[in-house]
Image (tube, rainbow, N blue to C red; front, top):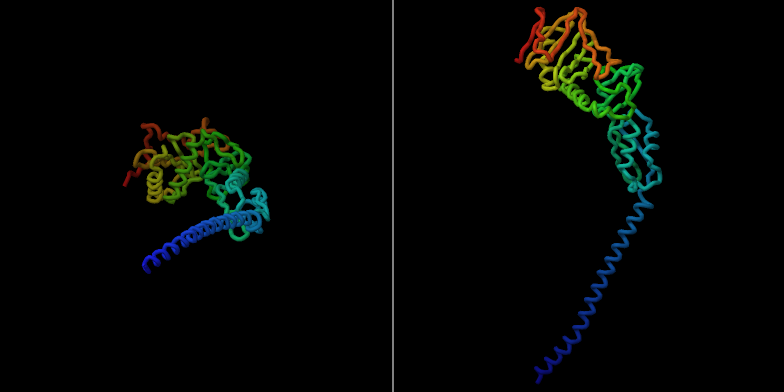
Length: 312
């Protein structure tokens, strides 16, 4: 009898606990919902405060700039004080500065919390100049016109001949038809840098099969095509040093033959009129004694007073 009473008591207790468990589950579900709503509210509030109240710009600085006034760059960027730093349109700012200022090649916008914007400028370096008559036009490695009508040629800056446009606008790029010559200029300058070759102040790109360098009125250096430029320059350096050509020699150094360097002495070296030369109207330099160099001809041979150095 007592066992039956215990069973009834347990049954009544279990029946009373079931609704209580259901209530707890409902409360737990409601709590999770409230937590989610609170989280969404906090995230939304944080975003709103971040883009409206906090992180307002108090300072704007410029680094890496050497050619322009920092204030001009800041004004051109369109960045304003008290503006939220996370609402800036970085790509638009970069494109505007690069387009407006010829020496600027890259711009990085760095946010320095809590309130400073840093414009990190990377400037292009001129590697060659075009003589435009009234002054020099400086061009970058990418073929962009950095500066026009510069009255004085920068030190150790070579004059480059053979481009189709003599007076391009500042900030523009040389025309599409000059793209191959821009690449050849890059190749020559990189080869010269790697080999330490510095005996030239004029680059003549007028004929892609007869590339030439000139060093004052001392050397006319024939490279031929743009293949193996480093190797050719190394051979030329070897000839100049071993034969002591810097003292007393004037004439042509021909490295257009594979693995060989020929020299042809002459009374002087006639430098082409680079200030008026166009790529389709190239002058053919000749020495005072009438000697000429034609690296593209198989019959071009050294005179009796010349010498050659073959590949080591």
